[in-house]
Image 1 (cartoon, one colour):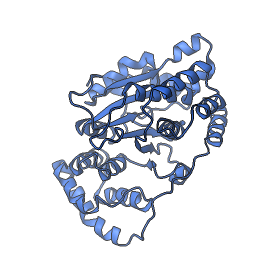
Image 2 (cartoon, helix red, strand yellow):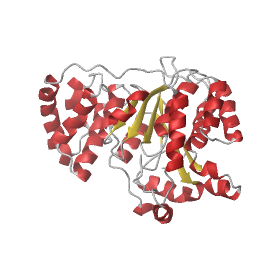
Image 3 (cartoon, helix red, strand yellow):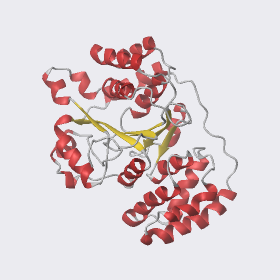
Image 4 (tube, one colour):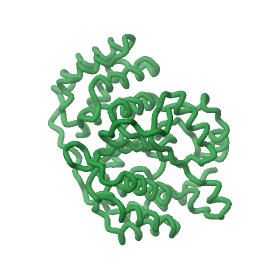
Length: 345
């Protein structure tokens, strides 16, 4: 509802993108950009299941940080939309596009790495050395989409904040991406202030453009491409950060509002198992999704529960995706080239 922090210490951190991750936004053309800017809060459409998952993460002790490329002038409308969805968040960061234009910093208008990476690192630095009950760094889950550079930015953030990317390499990569010097310096300053320990458990990439999941294998097991919001809910629950009942509430939204049936729910689960993103910890607990299912969704969730054992029994053993050493120079160069060739029409 507001950007006030939760009263109790968080169990984990969830970092969300907005456009094409939480909101159904079109910005491929200048007409799309104008229409998006003029939309009233009640006209903005939420990606199916996203609002329910965001609320469930907050209720489970997640500290929600929203980082979007939408312009700061849209803050009031975005806050109103999140309020209409019943979403609570700790911080909402929007892009200073008007300032960039007035200062003729044209590269910054489209540069996602130079904007998002320093903001992510600064947010992590502001958290200090907060730890989970186990003593490890407070776990983080990151949610983005396949339309921009989220897979690259989030992976680089995860490795830089874990101490796996040096300051020198980070600066070199940002300059290769065309970032301005002050953005590079902000990222480096934040990195120096971070308690550099592994924290990012999962990077979830919404396949808004139906990009084949195989396109993201080069990023390793940490990155989970997903088709619908039941899938990240399942992975986060498999990791112990959400209850099966919470997953049941996400499934209910897909059933009630978006006509998913039990077969579609079961195949969403099976898809994750086939790609190696579920460890199997939830296999025997799927019936517990009923604890959170809405009455009008119970029959579909029960159908999912009945179908899964049969489907899983036919599933050959699946090894999880590997953990490759990422070639960030090649990834940044490729992203920079795609951005240069994808100007709005």
